[in-house]
Length: 68
Image 1 (cartoon, rainbow, N blue to C red):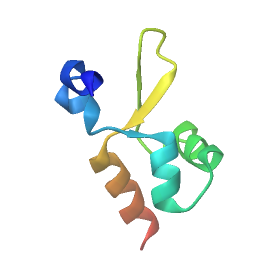
Image 2 (image 1 turned 45 degrees about the vertical axis):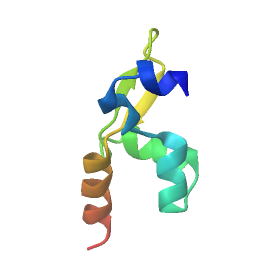
Image 3 (image 1 turned 90 degrees about the horizontal axis):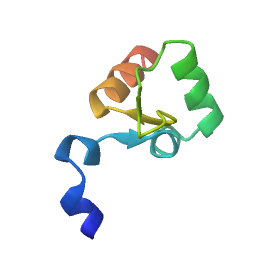
């Protein structure tokens, strides 16, 4: 619970690769491939920049592009 008090609001609404994979019923590797191919916008966060986060709007845009 303390993490929620110190984590900025915008970071709390970002999705992880795992969350996007669960929402899309696919593997985390598939999500990472979409990010690498430039199909899904993501940002690197954390001290080392290793963590990937996806804004919900970017995820919606990605889904709309593939739902056509």
